[in-house]
Length: 138
Image (cartoon, rainbow, N blue to C red; front, side, top):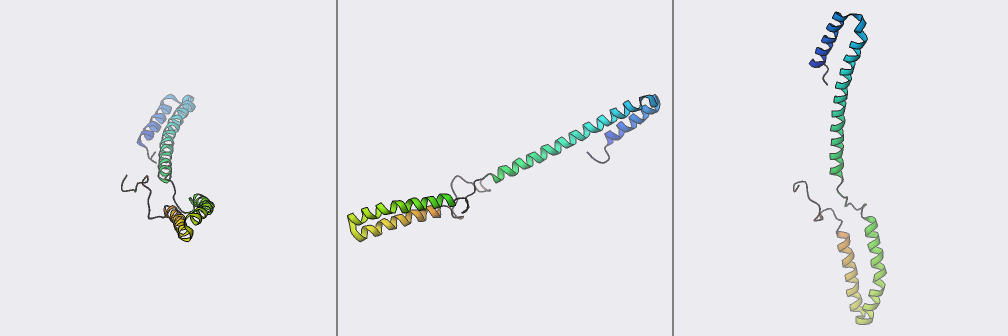
């Protein structure tokens, strides 16, 4: 609602004109009617503003709802993966040593380190997941 609303100005002029014609007996009814129209106009303006703000907030939430793949967000997953790989490294090392001695142990540990390196590299910023799209692809 603008500070100078032409429709409200016309309503006020009509209310004042009606008061002059009808006298002071109808003054409270005329004022109530005018104030009711002002209230309806304010309610409409407030409703539009609230709807606009809600839409803006929903858009902001929708934009920020993308899953975070930062190092802090994946710490638990990476820590758990590391612990499990160390637990599995013991029997893998024993099997490798029994079957192929030192070369088997080296191959087993290269495999363990390789799997952990690939898992750790998965969260690096320059490596994007296929499910994510950049802002240009949307």
